[in-house]
Amino acid sequence: MKQFKLTYKPYGNSAILIEWPQKIAIEILNDIQILVAKIENKNYKEILELNYVYNSLLIKYNSKYIHFLELKDKVELLYKKSFSDKIMVRSTSWDIPVCYDPEFGIDIAYMATEKNVSIDEIISLHTSAIYTVFGIGFLPGFLYLGGLPKKLHISRKEIPRLKILKGAVAIGGNQTGIYPQQSPGGWQIIGKTPVSLFNISKENPCKMKPGDRICFKSISKEEFLAIELEEDRGNYELKNSLLND
Image (tube, rainbow, N blue to C red; front, side, top):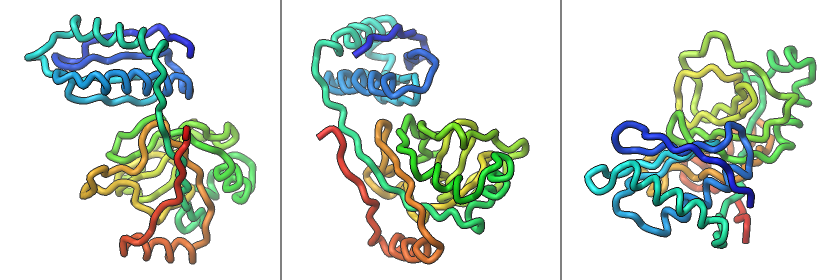
């Protein structure tokens, strides 16, 4: 695997921000995941939390036990070692049902006009791609997905909406994503999923993790309502399969 030139910066008094080259790429995501696995395998008591998205890794640590330069040296050494040690980073492929009916996809007609394509073509393009989860946030459970077909790239709204419904499937710039809860937002809404992607009451509140793959499956309004009912009853399970077996 290619070795990248990394930058290490203090982030406040008790965190290190590590940055890879400024681009969205699966090989960079894989490289970050390998380093994360190396750190987790060491089980450092001074490291409190690891968060990563796109091309950066934030390491939060207990400054009572270690200082920035000491931890930086440890992580740099681990990064160099990670290319001689074999580590399997497992990920999951998920099928997410989406209803693209204009009742839910309130911007899909606008988008079709802007892109000079039919609504059916937007749906076909959006469901034909395989997306990679590059990170989670700005809302808990919000998936940042890479792999959106270029023909679907579209600018965000100049004036964000004050309320976007939970489950809204949207496009903003060169990304697509799903709003895990009701919130303000400026992305173009093209559909809605009846499935909850974030549940604070669960041991693992978010089903997905960085590195997972997402496929969107188009469903009718009738199928949406049926799945929503099963979801409310706690009986619906997303179709998924393990990768890297």
